[in-house]
Amino acid sequence: MYPGSNNLASQAPQTLDDAANEAASGSCVVPSADALTTSQLFEEYAAFAVRALLHLGVREADVEDVCQEVFVVVHRKLGDFEGRSSVRTWLYGICVRVAKDHRQRAHRRYEEPCAAPPGGSCAPTQEVTLQRSRALRAFENALDQLDDAKREVFVLFEIEGLSMKEVAEALDCPLQTAYSRLHAARDVILGAMQLFHGGAS
Amino acid sequence: MSHEQDPPRWGAATHGLPESLVAGLEEARAALPGADRLARMRSGLAPLLTVSAAASLGAVVPSSTVAQTAISGSGTLAGKTAVSGAAGLSGKLLVPWVLVGGIVAATVGGVVAFRSTQVSEAPIASRARSAVPSSAVPSSAVPSGAVPSGAVPSSAVPSGAMPSSARGPELSQERTPEAAVPKLPLVHPSSAVAEPVHEAGSLAPEARLLAQARAQLTTDPRATLRACEQHQREFSRGVLSQEREVLAVEALVRLGRNAEAQARVARFRAKFSGSPHLPRLEALVSTQQPLKQ
Image (cartoon, rainbow over all chains, first blue to last red; front, side, top):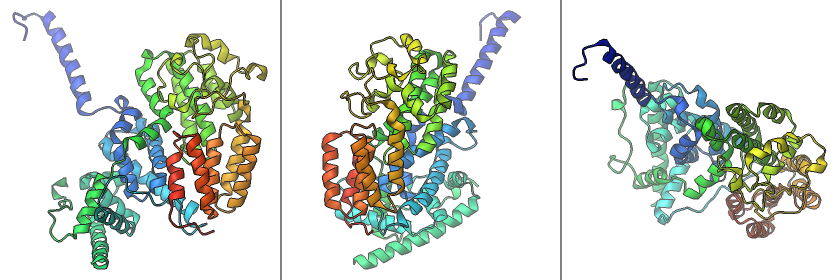
């Protein structure tokens, strides 16, 4: 590298450089958890977390609270994150668990004492055509017919775009289990949407 | 074992899918939240986001500023969240973490460690008192936790013009008699207008009253409503008046008194136009079917 460097003195800095480069490239390939802050994760993933939570059955009126809970958990657990899965997968796993907790609490809080939960309906936020917003509602109703386990797999794979391997990691279940849940979920959704079609036409 | 085995995702190209399913899926995938919703959550999480950013900055941030941010976070959020889960975080989750944030910040500085132990052991009321100078900061100013204290509106914070290093002795006197406190006006968290003196120590009774009111919401909304009226009488300028209004509206909706609920939301909108509670309130009164008792 260095012209005329045939003595030991010039080799020492070279190896030090190499060591530094290695360390630097190592930390690029596997980003250490220390390098991540809750703030960065929030900016990168909050929007996806909200979308996932909504499709995991958190109601529109509660989703901000629940998403904040997700990031409180993220903040608390960030130090324990080992980098065995991607941060994204890890975060979706947290979303799934917080949403499940919330549904159980929400069930107690709202559905026992009164007939219809308040604040359940919100106007569509975008100018979607009537037909598309109807389709979305029918799709959401179809999602509601899935049990938790199938719904989680379906939402993470079909809507959030995780690979099945990531889905299995996020849900902490065997890959084969995830596959069979996906197939079962697809059957249920398909059946529900065909019913919707039958009713609509 | 790799995701080469993954079935293709459903979409327009998938054979045999009903059109509405494709449309529904596409809408669901496109349903990302707007910037306003993200901004509301960001300000709700401000103590966590700024503390973690400050901790990672380490020595760059003046330690007294960091510690102060953490303390102000615990002061305002403990108050705001002790009562309602409406738009804030649930208190039991957040408060310990704000406290930990305070401890982390204190260790970063290495100067104010003794103060953080005081804070973490103090009951809510005295914590609120110790946080008086900074709980006067409007909540919208809290997210910028790393800015020097001079950046908050000086009308709201009497000592805001003071360099933060001058605050040490002032804060360390937090155990002095309350006579020292009333000089500092407490401003409603989401309004920048200074309100007349309201003793910060009253946060605990205020919070207790509203917590009781909320506990009865599902079983006896009328009792909730009565408690809200009591709160309005006793704490007409309370820190938690927004939370009280949210509770009252929820109670009215549960009682099927939608017209009154709507009127109350309209008054709320006029008074606290930028409140993070507003979207939820509007969603509450826009529910089509009246709730059955």
